[in-house]
Length: 411
Image 1 (cartoon, rainbow, N blue to C red):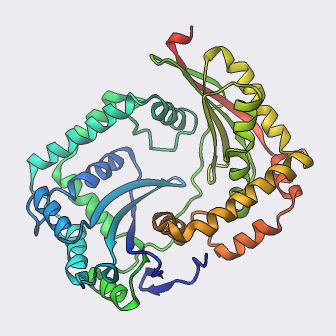
Image 2 (cartoon, rainbow, N blue to C red; image 1 turned 45 degrees about the vertical axis):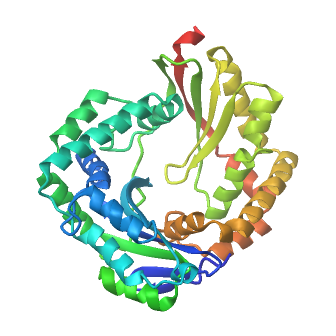
Image 3 (tube, helix red, strand yellow; image 1 turned 135 degrees about the vertical axis):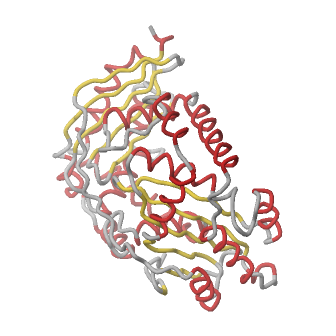
């Protein structure tokens, strides 16, 4: 998949593929990352789709979306290596697919939603706050999401980012409820002044792409993101009790730098259905109902997660250490590397069928999240990778801590 042959127009990138009946737009802006700003950004993801100078109500916006062939638009605020990136995302039906050139109206709608907000509606601000709080109330009852959030904020706290409902519900509510319209306006102005880049992917020609760029009239002002934030990692064993049936456990290991290619191979070796985590924790020892591993690229951490009984905690930790140790065994690495490579290239082959995955891959590359490496070169590195390369990196793996959300009923 030649994701590196992009057309660049003033920080907007086009990947044209008429194999789709649709196309996607993603615009990235760099945000502040302190606690209060994080709350403001979450409110903005709701508020910007409620109050606009052109479309006065959220119902007006929804009606316009339906008129534009169910155009779908939303805002998201995501962590990228210790930095907050605020994104506009839109999915549109291709003009070729419906034989109707509605591009001008669609592009103007997206422009108006992003560039013409109305920061005068206190009633809708309160609605947005309540929706955000209700969403957090819902998540806190999803025990797996709750445990993941607690893990990230207890074991891997980023500086000035302890804005998390699972850690301190009342503290987060107090931040949300303190936000004013002036706060929204100031943070919004900061975002618009820090446009990074945009990606357009799918069935759209270069002329329409250039018309979209002209319509938005955005120029990149922030080209590079600093992913070098130091992370103070909690060491040892941490246990938190929660009124849930099962327990959730994370075992974390330090590692040295990984390349993009090594990251993709190691991740697949651990996480495929035939990978080391499932085969060891589930098939070999029967310790888990579900398990996975995550490689935190910039934090230089690998964690192995499982949903299990509290009584199996010690065996789970031993099995995780066994997985890590096996990554220094050439025959094991050779076996699972083959499985990983086959899966990676199968996914690469089918990438052309998944526009959203393709959009995110291109966006991550343009944000230099895994380094500014040509995807074709990364695939070549993967193809030529030898077991010794993974084994060499695995030698640096060192267990840092164990984190568990303990279910009360496991006593």
